[in-house]
Length: 231
Image (tube, rainbow, N blue to C red; front, top):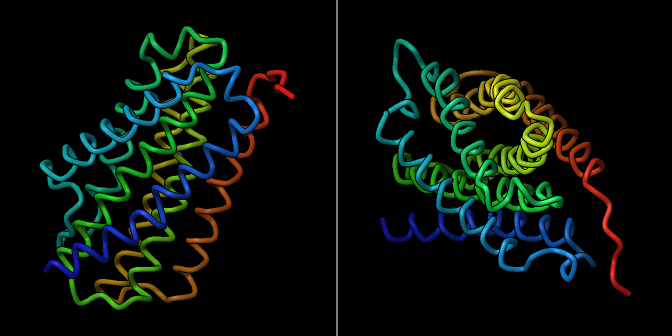
């Protein structure tokens, strides 16, 4: 059991937390002096805390559990709205929303929120299915990495929505996009744990998830407010 937990911790750090950190550093590269350092750390920290709480709510509700009759339907239909509620709550904090550079903080919040949720999700999955092979773990981790990228982009887009007084509408629309992505993720889980779905279809779903997430993140990045960099 200890080795399983250790393996999940290492993979979670390598696949989720470190990429989230590197992406955030890339976004704010050269702008650190123009942003409020305290709020940069605060956004990332709050993302980790609320991401952990969101995953705890999902765990307690049991929506993440596979059922013989409904499969992963509860996870697909309920999880996106739980996640978006916590995403919106964190980004809409007065500490961030009133800042002209709010999308930068929201990007950090979303990336570390996603890193935290996927970290705990992988930990619970390895605890529930200790017999998984390294390939199975890698496949699940790659789906999770795509989700981290998606939630980083979501953070920026919700911030833009709040600035235009339609933050709730933006979050709701993104919840439906996330629902589709969780469906692809669930297909991967069903393939790994229950031998359902052809492997190539699962890979196609993984590629689709990463492409959608990457496009959302990239478009959000392009809309970031321009700040003069220090020499």
